[in-house]
Image 1: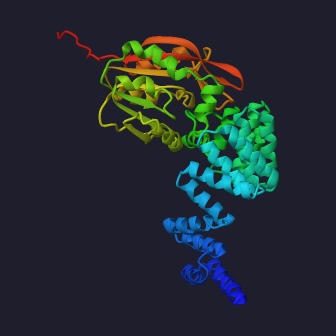
Image 2 (image 1 turned 180 degrees about the vertical axis):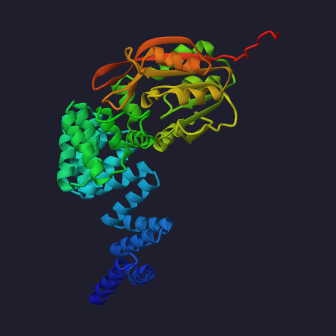
Image 3 (image 1 turned 45 degrees about the vertical axis):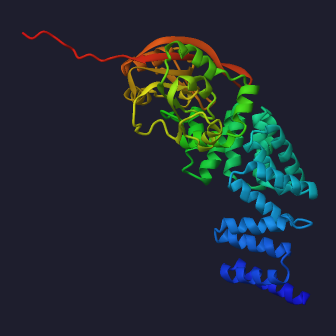
Length: 439
């Protein structure tokens, strides 16, 4: 009887491997009629359902296997992955925590647990999990890369570089690790070495806009007018879970509050407001009391998910600032904190802003400070642009936006150093026709 069961399982596994999914499903279901608590059969059936894109069925059989005594670890792992796909990160944390309690050396589970902790904004727990992941699964390149990302967030840049190098040693064509290593080396001002990493990414994937942009930030080619939207999206999708905790608690980020203080004398009740590049919505609580309608837009979908959790906005949408603006009504106020650092040429953006403000409407913004130069803006190795005050004011006026308030401020910290910037408020002025007497 035991031999028959093993033979049936082998045949079902072969059918699954060869893509005969209906045959494999039927065989596993038949086996479960005789032994409904077979963890191996339940887990195998669940993976068949996954391959058939029947997620609900897969989840049910994984849950049954996970609730056995003892639970089937592979089914628990698959259930945890499903919960991550469903964005149920706390549920995934519970499952992976139970797995590593039963099997402390399960490196893959430690890695996924770290990813889930990053998503819920627990960077300390995340880095601890990634360290265990590489200890128990030293050949898992993804865990080394994830550890590097976590170390980078804690400003352990040299440690992060070593982790990325380990990931590349294991998986030489790992473009994400090459790119991340380039960024870390750039922070360490090892520019030649960083250039080599970006070139490696482009050798593997010639269409990688982010790697090409980072080379441009090193002065290796003429810089573009803006950071590629794909790159900005990737940056903020990656850090969305830990963004607020690190930016506010560790980098003393207060630009949204400082900008609000500057623009607040011009605010009235019942305003239609646009948060341009809203991120996780750090400034939204300041403006909500003045807003009849508060819309937030950002290029990062994961940042918008975090903003949604605040339950402050009336509407949130994925939006590239350089795309055509097609909002149904004009705005009384548009504010934007630490967003224009990703754009050099601000002329098309100010044109869109002016076109979407009511007469007398307000724009409030922050930029990094640049001492006077011929172009008015410059791309730095940080991958961000800085602008001169003269450039900003001239560009605003060119589109009928008259500066009414400005101040200099420390807008954030970068590699432990203060970053100086400008906070500016401008008002859309009426445009009158040139009326001359007729002769």
